[in-house]
Image (cartoon, rainbow, N blue to C red):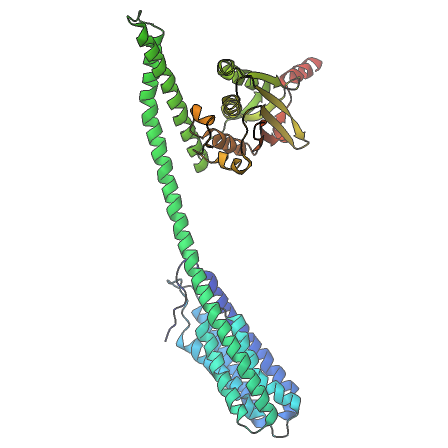
Length: 450
Protein backbone atom coordinates (compact mmCIF):
# COMPACT_ATOMS: atom_id res chain seq x y z
CA UNK A 1 0.00 0.00 0.00
CA UNK A 2 1.29 3.46 -0.87
CA UNK A 3 -0.13 6.83 0.07
CA UNK A 4 0.43 9.74 -2.31
CA UNK A 5 0.69 13.03 -0.54
CA UNK A 6 0.57 16.51 -2.12
CA UNK A 7 1.68 16.86 -5.70
CA UNK A 8 2.88 19.99 -7.46
CA UNK A 9 5.81 22.41 -7.24
CA UNK A 10 4.97 23.35 -3.63
CA UNK A 11 4.81 19.81 -2.26
CA UNK A 12 8.54 19.29 -1.72
CA UNK A 13 8.63 21.42 1.44
CA UNK A 14 5.62 19.62 2.95
CA UNK A 15 7.03 16.18 2.13
CA UNK A 16 10.33 17.10 3.78
CA UNK A 17 8.42 18.12 6.93
CA UNK A 18 6.54 14.79 6.97
CA UNK A 19 9.74 12.74 6.62
CA UNK A 20 11.49 14.94 9.17
CA UNK A 21 8.52 14.57 11.53
CA UNK A 22 8.75 10.78 11.35
CA UNK A 23 12.43 10.97 12.26
CA UNK A 24 11.55 13.07 15.33
CA UNK A 25 8.83 10.56 16.26
CA UNK A 26 11.39 7.74 16.16
CA UNK A 27 13.68 9.72 18.47
CA UNK A 28 10.83 10.65 20.82
CA UNK A 29 9.62 7.05 21.13
CA UNK A 30 13.12 5.78 21.90
CA UNK A 31 13.76 8.44 24.55
CA UNK A 32 10.29 8.35 26.14
CA UNK A 33 10.28 4.53 26.24
CA UNK A 34 13.65 4.45 28.00
CA UNK A 35 12.58 7.10 30.53
CA UNK A 36 9.29 5.33 31.23
CA UNK A 37 10.99 2.00 31.95
CA UNK A 38 13.80 3.55 34.00
CA UNK A 39 11.54 5.74 36.12
CA UNK A 40 8.81 3.19 36.92
CA UNK A 41 10.59 -0.18 36.76
CA UNK A 42 9.36 -1.18 40.23
CA UNK A 43 5.74 -0.29 39.36
CA UNK A 44 5.65 -2.33 36.14
CA UNK A 45 5.51 -6.06 35.47
CA UNK A 46 9.20 -6.87 34.95
CA UNK A 47 8.88 -9.70 32.38
CA UNK A 48 6.38 -7.77 30.32
CA UNK A 49 8.22 -4.43 30.40
CA UNK A 50 11.53 -6.01 29.31
CA UNK A 51 9.87 -7.55 26.28
CA UNK A 52 7.97 -4.32 25.61
CA UNK A 53 11.06 -2.11 25.50
CA UNK A 54 12.97 -4.61 23.33
CA UNK A 55 10.15 -4.86 20.79
CA UNK A 56 9.63 -1.07 20.81
CA UNK A 57 13.29 -0.38 20.03
CA UNK A 58 13.29 -3.04 17.32
CA UNK A 59 10.24 -1.51 15.64
CA UNK A 60 11.63 2.04 15.85
CA UNK A 61 15.00 1.00 14.43
CA UNK A 62 13.37 -0.98 11.61
CA UNK A 63 11.17 1.99 10.69
CA UNK A 64 14.15 4.36 10.71
CA UNK A 65 16.10 2.01 8.43
CA UNK A 66 13.10 1.67 6.11
CA UNK A 67 12.69 5.44 5.89
CA UNK A 68 16.40 5.91 5.21
CA UNK A 69 16.25 3.43 2.36
CA UNK A 70 13.09 4.96 0.94
CA UNK A 71 14.44 8.52 1.20
CA UNK A 72 17.10 7.84 -1.42
CA UNK A 73 16.73 10.02 -4.55
CA UNK A 74 14.52 8.45 -7.16
CA UNK A 75 12.94 9.38 -10.49
CA UNK A 76 9.82 10.73 -8.80
CA UNK A 77 9.75 13.86 -6.66
CA UNK A 78 6.65 12.58 -4.82
CA UNK A 79 7.51 10.62 -1.67
CA UNK A 80 5.19 7.70 -0.92
CA UNK A 81 5.58 5.93 2.45
CA UNK A 82 5.84 2.19 1.93
CA UNK A 83 3.76 -0.52 3.57
CA UNK A 84 6.77 -1.32 5.74
CA UNK A 85 7.03 2.24 7.12
CA UNK A 86 3.29 2.45 7.82
CA UNK A 87 3.29 -1.06 9.32
CA UNK A 88 6.07 -0.26 11.78
CA UNK A 89 4.25 2.97 12.67
CA UNK A 90 1.09 1.02 13.54
CA UNK A 91 3.16 -1.51 15.47
CA UNK A 92 4.89 1.06 17.68
CA UNK A 93 1.58 2.88 18.28
CA UNK A 94 0.03 -0.41 19.36
CA UNK A 95 2.93 -1.00 21.75
CA UNK A 96 2.30 2.38 23.37
CA UNK A 97 -1.40 1.60 23.66
CA UNK A 98 -0.47 -1.67 25.38
CA UNK A 99 1.32 0.09 28.25
CA UNK A 100 -1.87 -0.34 30.29
CA UNK A 101 -1.08 -4.06 30.58
CA UNK A 102 2.31 -3.26 32.14
CA UNK A 103 0.82 -1.66 35.26
CA UNK A 104 0.81 -3.75 38.45
CA UNK A 105 -2.32 -3.61 40.65
CA UNK A 106 -0.23 -2.03 43.41
CA UNK A 107 1.33 0.65 41.19
CA UNK A 108 1.68 4.17 42.60
CA UNK A 109 -0.71 6.90 41.36
CA UNK A 110 2.17 8.70 39.62
CA UNK A 111 3.07 5.55 37.71
CA UNK A 112 -0.57 4.98 36.75
CA UNK A 113 -0.87 8.51 35.38
CA UNK A 114 2.50 8.42 33.59
CA UNK A 115 1.92 5.08 31.88
CA UNK A 116 -1.68 5.92 31.03
CA UNK A 117 -0.70 9.19 29.37
CA UNK A 118 2.27 7.75 27.46
CA UNK A 119 0.20 6.71 24.44
CA UNK A 120 -1.60 10.07 24.49
CA UNK A 121 1.68 11.98 24.45
CA UNK A 122 2.98 9.99 21.48
CA UNK A 123 -0.30 10.41 19.54
CA UNK A 124 -0.50 14.15 20.21
CA UNK A 125 3.18 14.55 19.28
CA UNK A 126 2.43 12.99 15.90
CA UNK A 127 0.01 15.86 15.21
CA UNK A 128 2.77 18.39 15.78
CA UNK A 129 5.76 16.55 14.29
CA UNK A 130 4.01 15.24 11.16
CA UNK A 131 2.01 18.21 9.81
CA UNK A 132 -0.08 17.17 6.82
CA UNK A 133 0.61 13.44 7.38
CA UNK A 134 -2.95 12.53 8.30
CA UNK A 135 -2.47 8.78 7.61
CA UNK A 136 0.63 8.63 9.82
CA UNK A 137 -1.17 10.55 12.56
CA UNK A 138 -4.15 8.19 12.43
CA UNK A 139 -1.69 5.29 12.76
CA UNK A 140 -0.79 6.69 16.19
CA UNK A 141 -4.26 7.90 17.21
CA UNK A 142 -6.36 4.77 16.66
CA UNK A 143 -4.21 2.45 18.86
CA UNK A 144 -4.05 5.20 21.48
CA UNK A 145 -7.85 5.44 21.52
CA UNK A 146 -8.15 1.66 21.80
CA UNK A 147 -5.69 1.69 24.70
CA UNK A 148 -7.63 4.44 26.46
CA UNK A 149 -10.90 2.51 26.12
CA UNK A 150 -9.27 -0.64 27.53
CA UNK A 151 -7.91 1.30 30.52
CA UNK A 152 -11.37 2.74 31.14
CA UNK A 153 -12.71 -0.80 31.70
CA UNK A 154 -9.78 -2.15 33.76
CA UNK A 155 -11.46 -1.33 37.06
CA UNK A 156 -8.67 0.98 38.27
CA UNK A 157 -10.40 4.35 38.97
CA UNK A 158 -7.34 6.52 38.38
CA UNK A 159 -6.55 4.79 35.07
CA UNK A 160 -10.16 5.19 33.99
CA UNK A 161 -10.11 8.94 34.71
CA UNK A 162 -6.82 9.42 32.90
CA UNK A 163 -8.12 7.37 29.98
CA UNK A 164 -11.18 9.60 29.60
CA UNK A 165 -8.97 12.68 29.72
CA UNK A 166 -6.71 11.08 27.09
CA UNK A 167 -9.70 10.54 24.81
CA UNK A 168 -10.48 14.25 24.99
CA UNK A 169 -6.89 15.15 24.09
CA UNK A 170 -6.84 12.67 21.23
CA UNK A 171 -10.12 13.96 19.81
CA UNK A 172 -8.81 17.52 19.82
CA UNK A 173 -5.51 16.36 18.31
CA UNK A 174 -7.29 14.50 15.51
CA UNK A 175 -9.39 17.56 14.67
CA UNK A 176 -6.31 19.81 14.69
CA UNK A 177 -4.45 17.42 12.40
CA UNK A 178 -7.42 17.15 10.04
CA UNK A 179 -7.77 20.91 9.64
CA UNK A 180 -3.99 21.34 9.40
CA UNK A 181 -3.94 18.83 6.58
CA UNK A 182 -6.70 20.67 4.74
CA UNK A 183 -4.92 23.98 5.26
CA UNK A 184 -1.63 22.59 3.91
CA UNK A 185 -3.41 21.05 0.94
CA UNK A 186 -5.16 24.33 0.11
CA UNK A 187 -1.88 26.22 0.59
CA UNK A 188 -0.14 23.89 -1.84
CA UNK A 189 -2.96 24.35 -4.36
CA UNK A 190 -2.92 28.13 -3.94
CA UNK A 191 0.86 28.23 -4.29
CA UNK A 192 0.60 26.24 -7.52
CA UNK A 193 -2.05 28.59 -8.86
CA UNK A 194 0.04 31.65 -7.95
CA UNK A 195 3.08 30.18 -9.68
CA UNK A 196 1.04 29.47 -12.80
CA UNK A 197 -0.41 32.98 -12.70
CA UNK A 198 3.08 34.45 -12.33
CA UNK A 199 4.34 32.48 -15.32
CA UNK A 200 1.32 33.55 -17.37
CA UNK A 201 1.87 37.20 -16.42
CA UNK A 202 5.58 37.01 -17.26
CA UNK A 203 4.77 35.43 -20.62
CA UNK A 204 2.14 38.08 -21.35
CA UNK A 205 4.58 40.84 -20.35
CA UNK A 206 7.24 39.42 -22.68
CA UNK A 207 4.73 39.24 -25.54
CA UNK A 208 3.60 42.81 -24.81
CA UNK A 209 7.17 44.10 -24.82
CA UNK A 210 7.92 42.31 -28.10
CA UNK A 211 4.77 43.70 -29.73
CA UNK A 212 5.52 47.23 -28.53
CA UNK A 213 9.13 47.05 -29.70
CA UNK A 214 8.22 45.70 -33.14
CA UNK A 215 5.26 48.05 -33.60
CA UNK A 216 7.29 51.06 -32.50
CA UNK A 217 10.03 50.24 -34.97
CA UNK A 218 7.53 49.81 -37.81
CA UNK A 219 5.78 53.09 -36.94
CA UNK A 220 8.88 55.21 -36.51
CA UNK A 221 10.23 54.48 -39.99
CA UNK A 222 7.26 55.94 -41.93
CA UNK A 223 6.82 58.69 -39.33
CA UNK A 224 10.34 59.93 -39.90
CA UNK A 225 9.55 60.10 -43.63
CA UNK A 226 6.34 62.05 -42.92
CA UNK A 227 8.19 64.47 -40.65
CA UNK A 228 11.04 64.94 -43.10
CA UNK A 229 8.88 65.53 -46.18
CA UNK A 230 6.45 67.82 -44.36
CA UNK A 231 9.39 69.87 -43.09
CA UNK A 232 10.78 70.13 -46.64
CA UNK A 233 7.41 71.34 -47.90
CA UNK A 234 6.87 73.85 -45.08
CA UNK A 235 10.37 75.31 -45.64
CA UNK A 236 9.86 75.24 -49.45
CA UNK A 237 13.27 73.66 -49.97
CA UNK A 238 12.51 72.62 -53.57
CA UNK A 239 10.75 75.82 -54.49
CA UNK A 240 7.73 77.95 -53.56
CA UNK A 241 4.37 76.33 -52.88
CA UNK A 242 1.57 77.79 -54.99
CA UNK A 243 -1.11 77.96 -52.30
CA UNK A 244 -0.04 79.34 -48.89
CA UNK A 245 -2.69 77.18 -47.24
CA UNK A 246 -0.61 74.13 -48.15
CA UNK A 247 2.23 75.53 -46.01
CA UNK A 248 -0.08 75.55 -42.99
CA UNK A 249 -1.15 71.99 -43.73
CA UNK A 250 2.47 70.87 -44.08
CA UNK A 251 3.39 72.51 -40.76
CA UNK A 252 0.42 70.82 -39.04
CA UNK A 253 1.48 67.46 -40.49
CA UNK A 254 5.03 68.08 -39.28
CA UNK A 255 3.93 69.05 -35.74
CA UNK A 256 1.51 66.12 -35.46
CA UNK A 257 4.15 63.70 -36.72
CA UNK A 258 6.69 64.90 -34.17
CA UNK A 259 4.10 64.64 -31.39
CA UNK A 260 3.19 61.09 -32.41
CA UNK A 261 6.87 60.13 -32.66
CA UNK A 262 7.46 61.43 -29.12
CA UNK A 263 4.57 59.31 -27.83
CA UNK A 264 5.96 56.21 -29.55
CA UNK A 265 9.42 56.87 -28.12
CA UNK A 266 7.96 57.27 -24.60
CA UNK A 267 6.01 54.01 -24.88
CA UNK A 268 9.10 52.20 -26.11
CA UNK A 269 11.25 53.68 -23.32
CA UNK A 270 8.88 52.74 -20.53
CA UNK A 271 8.45 49.26 -21.99
CA UNK A 272 12.21 48.72 -22.07
CA UNK A 273 12.62 49.99 -18.51
CA UNK A 274 9.85 47.71 -17.20
CA UNK A 275 11.39 44.70 -18.94
CA UNK A 276 14.88 45.57 -17.64
CA UNK A 277 16.34 45.86 -21.15
CA UNK A 278 17.01 49.61 -21.10
CA UNK A 279 20.75 50.16 -21.14
CA UNK A 280 22.19 53.20 -19.41
CA UNK A 281 25.25 55.08 -20.64
CA UNK A 282 26.44 56.99 -17.59
CA UNK A 283 28.76 59.95 -17.97
CA UNK A 284 29.63 63.08 -16.02
CA UNK A 285 26.77 65.41 -17.05
CA UNK A 286 27.02 69.20 -16.41
CA UNK A 287 23.74 70.23 -14.82
CA UNK A 288 23.91 73.81 -16.13
CA UNK A 289 23.94 72.44 -19.68
CA UNK A 290 20.95 70.23 -18.89
CA UNK A 291 19.04 73.25 -17.56
CA UNK A 292 20.01 75.38 -20.57
CA UNK A 293 18.93 72.67 -23.03
CA UNK A 294 15.58 72.09 -21.29
CA UNK A 295 14.70 75.79 -21.09
CA UNK A 296 15.67 76.30 -24.70
CA UNK A 297 13.39 73.43 -25.76
CA UNK A 298 10.42 74.62 -23.67
CA UNK A 299 11.04 78.36 -23.95
CA UNK A 300 8.86 79.11 -27.01
CA UNK A 301 5.93 77.16 -25.58
CA UNK A 302 6.23 78.94 -22.23
CA UNK A 303 6.36 82.36 -23.94
CA UNK A 304 3.20 81.59 -25.95
CA UNK A 305 1.45 80.42 -22.78
CA UNK A 306 2.50 83.56 -20.89
CA UNK A 307 4.47 81.58 -18.28
CA UNK A 308 7.74 82.91 -16.83
CA UNK A 309 10.57 80.43 -16.20
CA UNK A 310 13.35 81.13 -13.69
CA UNK A 311 16.43 79.10 -12.80
CA UNK A 312 18.28 78.67 -9.49
CA UNK A 313 21.45 76.58 -9.89
CA UNK A 314 24.49 76.63 -7.57
CA UNK A 315 27.63 78.30 -8.90
CA UNK A 316 29.74 76.62 -10.04
CA UNK A 317 27.17 74.14 -11.36
CA UNK A 318 27.83 70.56 -10.22
CA UNK A 319 28.02 67.54 -12.48
CA UNK A 320 25.93 64.39 -12.07
CA UNK A 321 26.89 60.82 -12.90
CA UNK A 322 23.93 59.89 -15.09
CA UNK A 323 22.67 58.93 -18.52
CA UNK A 324 22.65 62.32 -20.26
CA UNK A 325 19.70 61.62 -22.55
CA UNK A 326 17.58 60.29 -19.69
CA UNK A 327 18.50 63.18 -17.39
CA UNK A 328 17.54 65.74 -20.04
CA UNK A 329 14.26 63.91 -20.62
CA UNK A 330 13.50 63.91 -16.89
CA UNK A 331 13.96 67.68 -16.59
CA UNK A 332 12.22 68.40 -19.91
CA UNK A 333 9.17 66.27 -19.02
CA UNK A 334 8.77 67.94 -15.63
CA UNK A 335 9.19 71.44 -17.10
CA UNK A 336 6.72 70.65 -19.87
CA UNK A 337 4.13 69.45 -17.33
CA UNK A 338 4.65 72.54 -15.17
CA UNK A 339 4.19 74.93 -18.12
CA UNK A 340 1.21 72.95 -19.43
CA UNK A 341 -0.77 73.24 -16.21
CA UNK A 342 0.18 76.81 -15.25
CA UNK A 343 -2.26 79.55 -16.32
CA UNK A 344 -1.14 82.66 -18.17
CA UNK A 345 0.85 84.99 -15.94
CA UNK A 346 2.08 82.13 -13.79
CA UNK A 347 5.66 81.16 -12.93
CA UNK A 348 7.79 78.03 -13.11
CA UNK A 349 11.08 77.71 -11.22
CA UNK A 350 13.83 75.16 -11.89
CA UNK A 351 16.17 74.66 -8.93
CA UNK A 352 18.98 72.27 -7.98
CA UNK A 353 20.15 71.80 -4.40
CA UNK A 354 21.12 69.34 -1.67
CA UNK A 355 17.98 68.23 0.16
CA UNK A 356 20.13 66.48 2.79
CA UNK A 357 23.64 65.11 3.17
CA UNK A 358 22.60 62.00 1.27
CA UNK A 359 20.46 63.46 -1.54
CA UNK A 360 20.83 65.97 -4.34
CA UNK A 361 17.54 67.12 -5.85
CA UNK A 362 16.31 68.76 -9.03
CA UNK A 363 13.06 70.57 -8.32
CA UNK A 364 10.44 72.23 -10.51
CA UNK A 365 7.96 74.48 -8.72
CA UNK A 366 4.96 75.98 -10.54
CA UNK A 367 2.05 78.22 -9.61
CA UNK A 368 -0.42 76.13 -11.57
CA UNK A 369 -3.75 74.50 -10.86
CA UNK A 370 -2.36 71.80 -8.54
CA UNK A 371 -3.29 68.14 -8.11
CA UNK A 372 -5.99 66.79 -5.74
CA UNK A 373 -4.49 64.92 -2.77
CA UNK A 374 -6.37 61.73 -3.65
CA UNK A 375 -4.81 61.72 -7.14
CA UNK A 376 -1.15 62.25 -6.18
CA UNK A 377 -0.36 58.54 -6.57
CA UNK A 378 -2.56 57.92 -9.59
CA UNK A 379 -0.66 60.44 -11.74
CA UNK A 380 2.35 58.09 -11.70
CA UNK A 381 0.39 55.33 -13.46
CA UNK A 382 0.95 55.08 -17.24
CA UNK A 383 -1.80 56.58 -19.41
CA UNK A 384 -3.61 58.10 -16.41
CA UNK A 385 -4.80 61.68 -16.80
CA UNK A 386 -6.60 63.47 -14.00
CA UNK A 387 -9.94 64.71 -15.26
CA UNK A 388 -10.49 68.44 -15.35
CA UNK A 389 -11.53 71.24 -17.63
CA UNK A 390 -8.03 72.72 -17.69
CA UNK A 391 -6.00 69.66 -18.60
CA UNK A 392 -8.52 68.60 -21.23
CA UNK A 393 -7.36 71.60 -23.31
CA UNK A 394 -3.86 70.07 -23.60
CA UNK A 395 -2.52 67.09 -25.47
CA UNK A 396 -0.90 64.23 -23.62
CA UNK A 397 -0.99 60.50 -22.97
CA UNK A 398 -0.25 60.45 -19.22
CA UNK A 399 3.16 58.81 -19.74
CA UNK A 400 5.33 61.74 -18.63
CA UNK A 401 5.43 61.23 -14.87
CA UNK A 402 5.47 57.44 -15.16
CA UNK A 403 8.51 57.69 -17.41
CA UNK A 404 10.24 60.22 -15.14
CA UNK A 405 9.75 57.98 -12.09
CA UNK A 406 11.04 54.92 -13.94
CA UNK A 407 14.13 56.79 -15.18
CA UNK A 408 14.80 58.24 -11.72
CA UNK A 409 14.62 54.78 -10.14
CA UNK A 410 17.10 53.48 -12.72
CA UNK A 411 19.51 56.06 -11.31
CA UNK A 412 18.69 54.80 -7.77
CA UNK A 413 16.75 58.02 -7.22
CA UNK A 414 13.12 58.87 -6.55
CA UNK A 415 10.39 61.22 -7.74
CA UNK A 416 8.09 62.95 -5.28
CA UNK A 417 5.21 65.37 -5.73
CA UNK A 418 3.82 67.99 -3.36
CA UNK A 419 0.74 69.83 -4.50
CA UNK A 420 -2.08 72.02 -3.29
CA UNK A 421 -5.16 72.80 -5.34
CA UNK A 422 -5.01 76.34 -6.73
CA UNK A 423 -1.53 76.95 -5.24
CA UNK A 424 0.72 74.91 -7.53
CA UNK A 425 2.90 71.81 -7.53
CA UNK A 426 6.47 70.93 -6.60
CA UNK A 427 8.01 68.00 -8.50
CA UNK A 428 11.32 66.90 -7.05
CA UNK A 429 13.71 64.25 -8.42
CA UNK A 430 16.31 63.24 -5.83
CA UNK A 431 19.51 61.35 -6.58
CA UNK A 432 22.03 59.84 -4.15
CA UNK A 433 24.64 62.45 -3.21
CA UNK A 434 27.31 59.94 -4.25
CA UNK A 435 26.35 60.66 -7.88
CA UNK A 436 27.32 64.36 -7.59
CA UNK A 437 30.76 65.09 -9.03
CA UNK A 438 33.04 68.09 -9.08
CA UNK A 439 31.89 70.99 -11.26
CA UNK A 440 33.66 71.72 -14.54
CA UNK A 441 35.19 74.97 -13.27
CA UNK A 442 36.41 73.32 -10.07
CA UNK A 443 38.17 70.66 -12.12
CA UNK A 444 39.79 73.35 -14.27
CA UNK A 445 40.92 75.32 -11.18
CA UNK A 446 42.36 72.15 -9.69
CA UNK A 447 44.23 71.44 -12.94
CA UNK A 448 45.71 74.95 -13.05
CA UNK A 449 46.76 74.69 -9.40
CA UNK A 450 48.42 71.38 -10.09
